[in-house]
Length: 381
Image 1: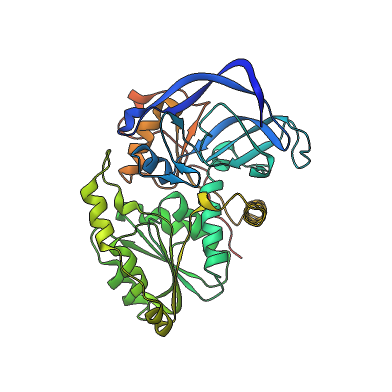
Image 2: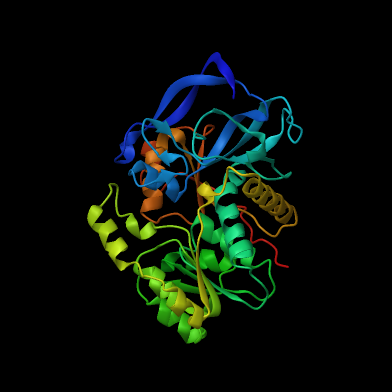
């Protein structure tokens, strides 16, 4: 464990209670002391926002260690610079630019975490890009290549293709020969997701995506990635080809508006299908569930994450992947940034930065500082 406090003060973005966007406040807090054995002290520059934080704010998220209870600090991913290393740390040194992952507690100016959860950033990667890697790209990588066993000539249906995970999924699919990607999003985002590699964009608001997929691929698809849950889970299962895989990794259908809706949650729950083993056997289909936050705590899981992170760094260096940062917000704007995501306005990743000034009034209509420029389409193998 880290040794005591430093006697200095830092800022952190605290969830003060369950409820609306106003429950997020930037407050003063003691700066951590020196890292313990196997730990590092990181000065954080940027952090990503994920649906995990949106669910946690509404009291709908349960971590591996129990329910998230305010007052607490959210944030599962961050990027920054190593300020101090604890005894026994050989993979990192002071001054290293890193991205890291942890079960929350990363929306702080300084964090102490296990060195095994921090990874050196490749040259040329910005802190905003690095903060977009851990949750989205690790989730996409492990779903596609471990659960999905993605190979050439396969097809994938990616819901929410304009989100952070959606961008990562599409780019990783395109590192495999002749993989066809169907992606759902609002029509005004189609140009962006096509530029990212989606072969067949589908406007889920005006069209039945099941019908649209079958027009092009009558037998369905090989992999369905489901961040929605509820009735869409059954639709996804029915869309699978023989030997197809449905991978469930979220419950976005359970979130409506700023506050938790028990009616909406009940509706989603009621719509969930029941999978019967004998029926799955005769259909030659499989169903899997993935939750990155629960994939930790044992050596095998940690090694899996480390290996995946190393491969993602390699892919970035080779120009095969490149995070698409939609916008950058100050931590004082965390609530506004969450609303921006909940309203499905983002195209790519939404990032918080300690270096960004609070310009809430200026950005009320549009969003944070746009970072679309320079996000070129990654290369393809």
